[in-house]
Amino acid sequence: MVTRKIKKPRVLKEKPFAEGTMTNAAFFGMLRAFLRSKSRFWPPIKICRDRAKEKYVGPNKRRKWSYKCESCKGLFDVKNVAVHHIVDCGSLKSFEDLTGFTKRLFVDSDKLVLLCNKCHDKIHNK
Image (spheres, rainbow, N blue to C red):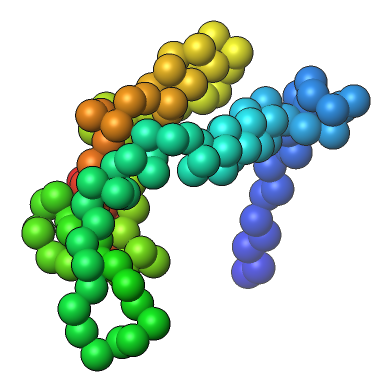
């Protein structure tokens, strides 16, 4: 006896943005990614990095600075650290979330900490 899978009817998602080409999730995902990419140039982010900067002492002659993780107190290269928001930015799934998300994303340096990628991943993967 041959069993066949019954196909579920395809549900078309509403696409209210970009002349009917983007779903709600795609639009707000794009907006969230854009805001996060621009937040890298926010001056308090640089202040947070500068606060954790230390003169590099080691064999690599090209490297000038190390960055101290607030959590594990280890010293890392700039590629291995991330600026972490103490208060999570939250979600951005509608226009009502936009104000709160941007207020939590663009904060002063006292609400930011520098963490190594390992410590940052531990916090976000809880």
